[in-house]
Picture 1 (cartoon, rainbow over the protein chains, first blue to last red):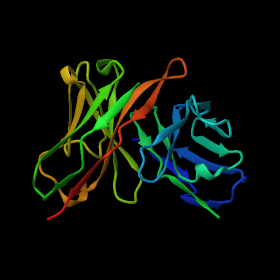
Picture 2: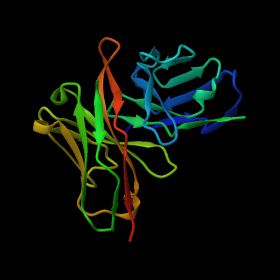
Picture 3: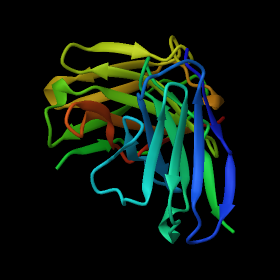
Picture 4: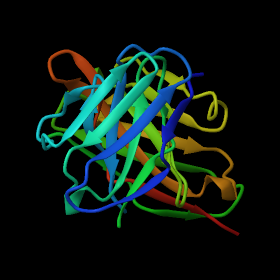
Length: 106
Length: 122
C-alpha cells in the first residue's frame, strides 16, 4: 500500500501569509494527487487535481506542484476563509489520504 | 445539480448491525464510482472502499477488508455501507463521495455527501 506523509500536521499563520504544505508518497505516483480542504463539520472539498490543476471555482491563490514522490500545496495569500484542514490524496494505486494539516489563525 | 444525500445519524450498541446509505442524483449513478470515507472523532480522513454501481465491482482498502460491506442498488441510485457487528471503535463520521471527471479527462472524488454520524456505545 502507498503511504502518504503530510507535513506539517499543523501551522499557525496570519491573513496575507504565504503557506506551504507538503506531501510525500512512499513510492512514485506520477502526478496522481489531489488536495482537499475540510472545514469543521463539513465534507471535504476538492481544490487541486492532477497535482497542479485548479478545480473549477477554486480561487487562484491556491496552487499545487510536484510529481513522483514530492508534492506541495501553496496558498499565496492566506484569507480568513482558508483556515481549515488540508489533505492530500494519492490516486495512483487505490487511494490513500495524508494525515492532514490544520491551518490555524496566528 | 449533482447531489449525494446520506442517511441520518445513527446510535447503536456494540454487536448490532447497521446499513447506511448514500443516494445520488443529478448524474448517471451507474457510471460513476462511489467511495466511502471514514473520519473518526478529531482525526483525519481514511479511504474505506469504492463501488462501481453499474456492475457492483467493489474495491476495499486493506484496512477495511472484511470489516464492512459496500453495496449498491442502481434501481434507486443508492450506495450502502454496512456492518454486521458494530464495535465502539466504529464511532465516526462516514462520508460518501462520487468519482467524476474534472478538467477534461481526469477523475477525482468531486462531490461529497453531507456525512452520516455513527455512534456506537453501550
